[in-house]
Image 1 (cartoon, rainbow over the protein chains, first blue to last red):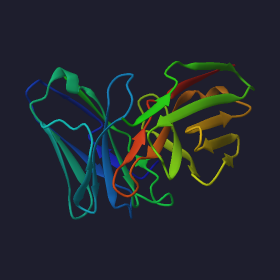
Image 2 (tube, rainbow over the protein chains, first blue to last red):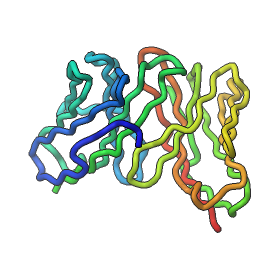
Image 3 (cartoon, chains in turn yellow, green):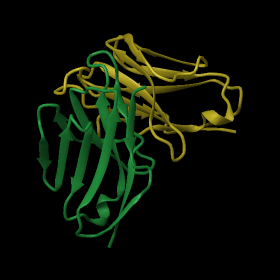
Amino acid sequence: DSGVTQTPKHLITATGQRVTLRCSPRSGDLSVYWYQQSLDQGLQFLIQYYNGEERAKGNILERFSAQQFPDLHSELNLSSLELGDSALYFCASSERPGHPATDTQYFGPGTRLTVL
Amino acid sequence: SQKIEQNSEALNIQEGKTATLTCNYTNYSPAYLQWYRQDPGRGPVFLLLIRENEKEKRKERLKVTFDTTLKQSLFHITASQPADSATYLCALDVDTGRRALTFGSGTRLQVQP
């Protein structure tokens, strides 16, 4: 158990809909990351937050947005969903980026999103 | 552009042999490099970190090397077991302090009993 929790575990929805994925980082970790992994594909970095502020952006679509709250949990919002958005969405946390002693990422179990 | 390359073809080896996986990168000068293991449908799990001034790091049956001249890291699993079958990802810090780790696409290892 990594200490990172994600809800829900599974989500099935229809095209055009909007969903929210939730992540709670490990206790003490200030940084949260979101990744998308489609079937048999590599991890695609979406976005990173550090202590409530956006720190880095990857290939995140404009239909997607995220935020990190004062209690450090994070939410990823996906809107106007398309079939191609079906994937595993992982959240990871680390103590602090940029230093080898604190930059190890701990991943949650993921949310499997299916768009029908 | 910046690039991380891992062999996309699966590596099949016999139980008891040493598995060697490769991670090559271009246009980076990472201060450190990490290796993760990912099982199907699960999140990656951290295995080892090696810093730029370290040539080699070991942990039980795992060994990682880091050659900053060749821009390459090798990941070895000795006395491999079927339970070692998984996808192994390397990850680099691209822009220390400002960006998230960048992950390679991973190499799938299959250990045959």
